[in-house]
Length: 130
Image (cartoon, rainbow, N blue to C red):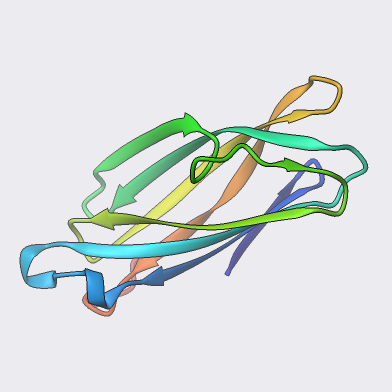
């Protein structure tokens, strides 16, 4: 698991290689990642937007920017958490993801919360690069 906290917002990510959805002979590798976002602070926040930078083992990257996560813009009161699962495909057997969530506090202040960099490794990568 990978973990990072920014301004009392804790983000934990657990990636999982999906063998049954991958096809290494066709250079198609798929991962799911479970994300837990916890508000350990004293003020309510809402997740507005997400940003991902996904890099494969050849150094090629793609960027994803969109509103919310899995179709939601969750609001987290102090002590609350939100958990979701998503996924990503790559054409290489390993890679890395990193990103940010744009949050807004109850008083209207916007700030970015770091999503920890996490490794996407499959059993088809002869040496773990990340």
